[in-house]
Image (tube, rainbow, N blue to C red; front, side, top):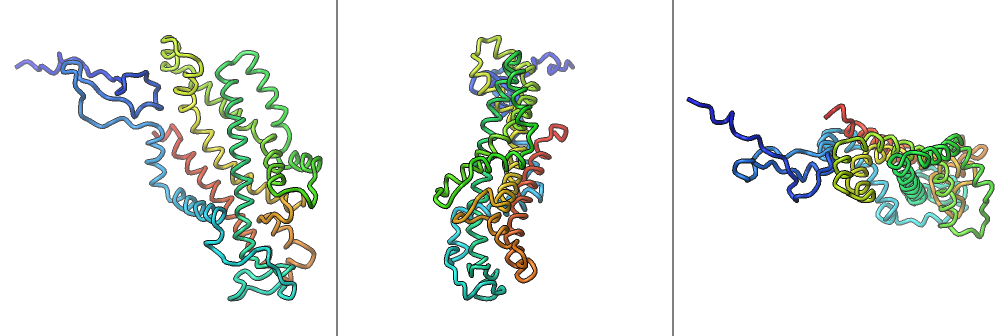
Length: 334
């Protein structure tokens, strides 16, 4: 008996939309077509890199723990009234440095303000600075790294040397210099103070993202689907948006998540030194600075304990989320 399956043509892999293929970025668009019948072949649909990463993240307890903590902190920043009904700016000197009680869960500070309320409301400024700084550095660094890696040549050399200049300046030290150069006063609006801190972090933080994006683009560009798109006459803008960027963005997003926690910590450090966020702004760094005066640490340790605890949990949550994402996007695991 003759085995007819040996002479049967192999199935062809085409795009379900009839368009160009771009590797992992359009793996969800793949359909297996039988060359004999012209119909689709039933079977398991190929999964993209993002699908594989999400599958691994769902099985990682660290992802769920950090995710829940981040959601809580975001809720505190967006709607602090859900967590406390007290006004963080309402202070009573007669109640200064009271220990934690049923009335004041975290005690009161040196001006008689409720520490719990200030800790809850402090999440808004700290997370706002972290989000804006991360967004700015990711956008600027990704654009510069994308151009440098895709274009190459003298433009790549020029952008890389400019990035090296900024990369050589320590982030914290550079932030101190910039904020000392452009000081705030009592009449400076809150949003201006925030944007100054964000600007200092963005000016010095983009080179690391640009380096990472450039390296990722250089790994993606030699792939066959990029060369095929060029051979078919696709414009550079289309190649970048449809093929290069989706396949090069994963490591950048991982590092950006970790950087968010780092920027929150740096903001707290700058505020502690008195050159970051300042009154009337409320942040964890400002609360830590107020609680670190001479004698306050020993006489009222709760003033320092609770803002520091919330700050540490927020920073660790974003760092752990980034580490979980880094493990999920690791190509050696797929």
